[in-house]
Structures are given as structure tokens and as C-alpha cells.
Length: 70
Image (tube, rainbow, N blue to C red):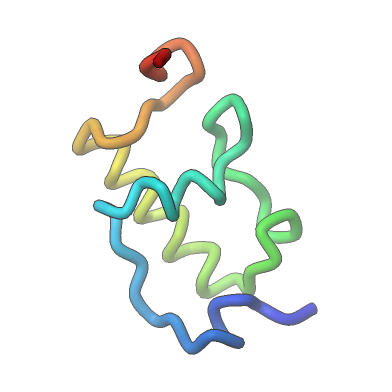
């Protein structure tokens, strides 16, 4: 299994880039598993921490009910 972050040489994950982080959560806004995301353990932790920080800063919702419907 090849990590897409390792392949593209991405070392930093920005918590402010919510459109990018939304690829790594499920439809119910749970953090998806590393196997589904195709990430290694190191990059899965970085993505998870960025998602948690974005949630804390109110940039991303914690649950589906908190999502803004447009």
C-alpha cells in the first residue's frame, strides 16, 4: 500500500484547508480509517490532528447535524 502523501512528498497538513480535509472524513463527519484514506500511520495521525484542530476552531463540524445546509 502506497501512501498518497509520501508519494506526493506532502509533509504538512494545514487545518485551515477544510475542503482538502473533507476528503478524509466520512459522510457523518467521522475521521475515516487509514485504509480508506490510503495513508500511512504517520500521515493519518497528521490528518487526524488537523481535523481535530479544525473542529475545535469551528471550521469543520463534529457531526452531520452541525453541518450547514446550503
